[in-house]
Image (tube, rainbow, N blue to C red; front, side, top):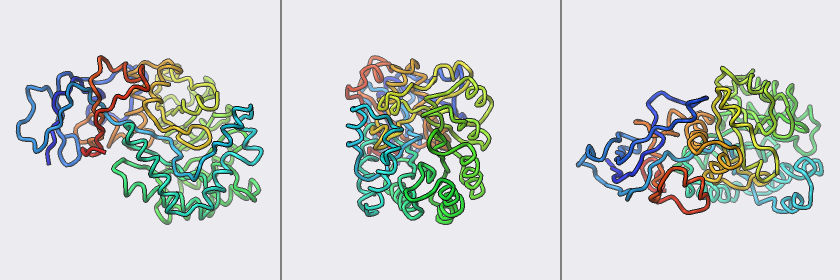
Length: 408
């Protein structure tokens, strides 16, 4: 089955095969082609080029009607498998309580764990799939989903089984991350819980092949650098590559321990110093910033511009979760990258496409317009420039979203 998209004003996000991320000055560039077509075959990008070279033998034609064509967004950090909501804590925040104060009162992540424990697998799947559909409707084609609202072995496994079920029933690309070390579960002492994660949870997750990655909330009031080192060592033993929550609440040492374990990404980074930038240089680790959390919690925004000026790449992700970023709109993340972090529209686009794909181990499959990659594509309404997308960040802009070449 050959599908040809015609009358494209500009293809944006073109990359040659083999380029898996962008760093430093590369963040300032995006490959483009004006007055173009793109050919899809068997769900993958087969070819693209100038309009005059468009093939005449396609089985189906889609008329872009002068819209742009971009790669779908990739969201490399989400917590969308959760039960209910935490709107009560939203009122607590309005009334002046901090994220840490809510957590210390037994709320936050522990509230989500209590709700999840009492929710059936089928109901948890139903609620989570609503969020997946919401995200794909807004242009996201690849999603990393974490556990971490179980905090008991069976409930962590329940979450990961729901993620597996989502992967089997959505056309989006889905990666799973085990985040048992998201908080200390109720009724556990700190050391007892770390041992549970290392000695019981990780082996059980690995036995069922439920996760691609292992993650730890290495931050003030949660897990120490020493805890994190032990947990990541245990995960590596079972074939789970490291990812890290770090430097959201304090300069925690999480970046350094993540780099030590060759983490694919270190995420949050609202509070970093020049030492973290220096530590990341020359590594395979992608700094990932979550402006949705900064927006919702009133935290500092990550120093993305300084990271790029130092020669590093940056990814941006939504952190979609019930407590600190209840929003999975990656166009809004793109806009915040521009408005609040002072990235150019092209820098921020690279951060929510190819670099976000890299941060979830999927940039060989998605994140750019590259022959052979999945045809996860956004066709926009006619626009005068790429800048209009993050500039008018609430104006409808998607004409059609394709996942593996099919309208979603």
